[in-house]
Image 1 (tube, rainbow, N blue to C red):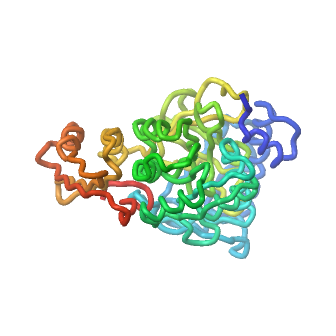
Image 2 (cartoon, helix red, strand yellow):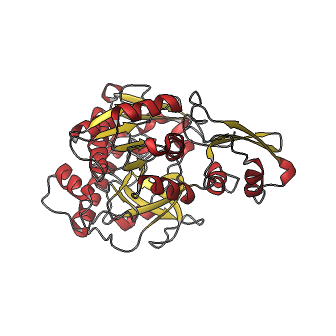
Image 3 (cartoon, one colour):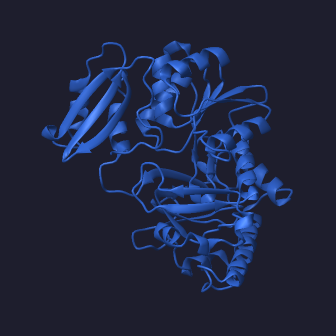
Length: 403
């Protein structure tokens, strides 16, 4: 089995010949101490932190950074001047209810993410192949643009479809371009595959930017005839965090740029293999590094070595830490209904209104009701269905959430 491309990428980034656990730990500590020294001189949000640690285990003693901290005074996290900032992402992440944040990136941050994306994409894509990208292309330096640049680095052809085309438009692109691979969110991929039927040429897919329920992953893999390559990223680490290797057993973390931790409800570290909240320290970010940032995502660090032989740690992420009904809960129980193309959920008072796109003349309202009833009382659910024609688009532009 081929070793994860991420280890090779880390070696190239850090100008080292090979990667071992000890080398990686020494590298992380060196970068962490360099960061602590910089933020001490900067005198901003982290000015009260120690300037030097003797081991990575001492990281546990430092306070957490929260989304509220970022929202209240983003400028206090900047290491350099505004002139070094080349890209700013502002606002609340699509589908979440957290505080509005501003995240700053330098040219170097963006370039690091492009080459990291290329390492992850190389697990499924070779030179000369065509990749359909359905991430947003709203701005230069945005997610879609960075992915397209990564695909080009591999000598492959990116098809910049974006996230706002109808199923008919996407189907036409599929016929014209015959893409080998797909990069986008998981539900839109399944919807497209079900709309296109046997006309799809896709063999592989990298999914990111939203939760991929187990039932959805299973359905997509049945269409593709191959395993998915999930990716994890968030704004606070310049959109790229961890990628899947060909072993398909967790996502390898870019540990030269990110130190991951998992904490329990007592905010203490848990054992590798146990679930908790993912906390990250972004030692590789140039202009807005974060120390012990609480992501709000439920995850675990896998305890056993990866079958591919790579050194970099692997994580599994289940989604947001939230006790409320989540869109992924609804997707999980509904998307093994073969006739379902897409579904959207919104609360009107205390009634959950579900709008479903269905294929052909499928009558699946009763089946939807049956599957959702364990989540909510039957009298609190209202379902409408619509035949999905070519003019229909994905019911969510970004992350899926209950409105």
